[in-house]
Image 1 (tube, rainbow, N blue to C red):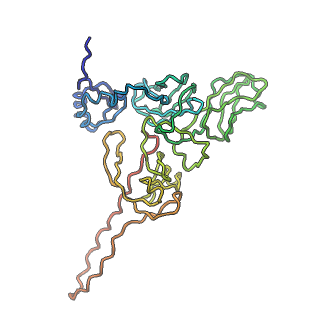
Image 2: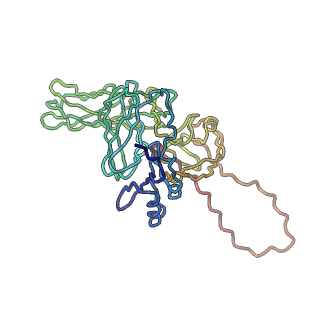
Image 3: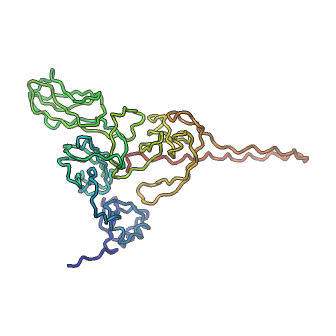
Length: 403
């Protein structure tokens, strides 16, 4: 039987409706009809690489059958085995993306949620896709809030997965223990005597809560440590049995200003493709940024941020002097096209990138004073309105972004 060629009739898009939630499977003509009643709608398109694109109606009308094809379908030779990928399906939504975090022993420790997507009515399932079938056994769950995936829980880490190679795209992160979940409460523990133990501890301190019959109902994280491999959590007891626990980690990209030691750092394989928010000390910076007096710093605000400068180029981050640059900024992350803008900063050179540079507003050179006029002084005229100060530059996007 002949295979029908791909045509523009196969192009389907979706959108988010306030009444119906995530609506999908609409043709280009149907999208234009909806746009006439709902101007400015963002449309959702799944391209041939199985990637979600967010389009305006003009971009929808520019789609052709080529957008349904893979960008590189001709890789016929042997390919190196990559780390596993994470694919979300079900739940009624679209767009969730995450990068896997694999330790040296091949355990899937965590998932860095880059994009929470939207439109999910129930928590989506996550499949761990290992092209070379070297690993197996990982089990992941998701949590949603207001239609967005907000957390990924690794219930089973599996084994045998490949960590990223040195030549693969990746970014630094730390895994900080945020929670310990009780999988099985066990029974017959001596709650006034037995101790909960985590190995290696890495500075972590835990406590637990008991129920009748010596059952462990809850574990509290009193002090969180950083981990690069899966810890073992157990009860030190002579009477209790069967309690089991699952550690949950927060993935902290670009761990500034935590300044962890090198052994605390893990490398995350960048499958999604994070946006670089600048450079610090000659290295790419993917974390959050905020602006102060026109200068960019690592962090989220002037209160909780840092004094670590984030520069627009690698060279500037080494020299400590920013120069005006032209940079494309994504004004609206829900639209594929971006609006170019020019971001300029004039700062004084400084010996250390860990201290904020002084922002200097450019001022015109003074012009010579005109010679006094022989005519009598005119009557005073009203003072001109003061020139409004320049608008601050647009704030950079956060690392979770991705979305």
